[in-house]
Length: 232
Image (cartoon, rainbow, N blue to C red; front, side, top):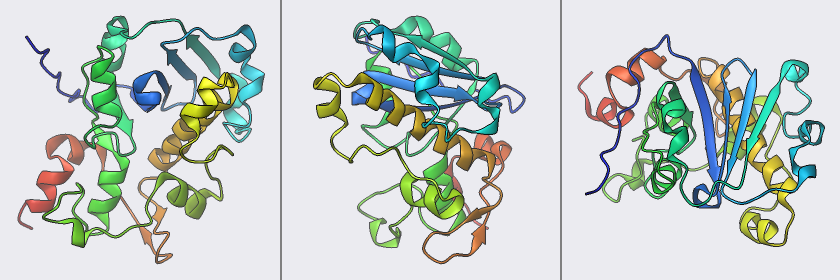
C-alpha cells in the first residue's frame, strides 16, 4: 500500500523549516527561520573534513548571525531515513519550487519523509505578480521567466548561488568533492531563507518594482494554485 501524504502543518505559530534537496533527495539541507540551526541529511558517508562548520562560512555569506549558528550533519543514512519525518512535520515547511512535480517534496517522499511544503516561495512570487503559480500546459503562456532562485537573490540581495555550475552538482559529488556540494546546498537554503525573511518587500528582477508575497496565514488557508483561480 502506498504511504499516504501527510498534509502540511496548519499552525502559524509553529517554527519554520526552510529546506532544499540535491541529488534527488540524497542530500537534504535545511535551517530554522531564526538562523539558529542548519541541518544536513545525507544518504552517503561523509569524510570528517566535510563536517567542519568553519568551511561553510561562504555558504552563509558570513552572515552576522553565523556566530550563533549550530550546524548538524547526519550522514550514512542509506536510501531511506523516515526517522526524521516527525521533525519535518512539526514545522511548517518553506521551499523554492519544492511543490513542483519531481522536485523536493517528491524526492523526500522517496526517502520515506512524507511531507508537503506549506509555503513555496516561487509559487507565491508568481501569484503576487499576477501569474499562475503552477506551470501547466494550459497556462504556461501566462508565466514569465526570470524568477529563479539565482535571479531573485541577486536582484534583492546582490548575492547568488555558490560557484558550482548548474548541472554539475551530481558530477562534482561523484568525483568526491563533497564539501563543494554541501556548501552549494547550504547556500541554496540560505538564499531561500533570505527570500522568506523579506517576502513582504521584494523586488521584481524583470521590472525593478517592489512587490509583496502573501502572509503565511493566507497560504495555509488557500493554496497558491486555488488562490489564482479564486474570484476576487
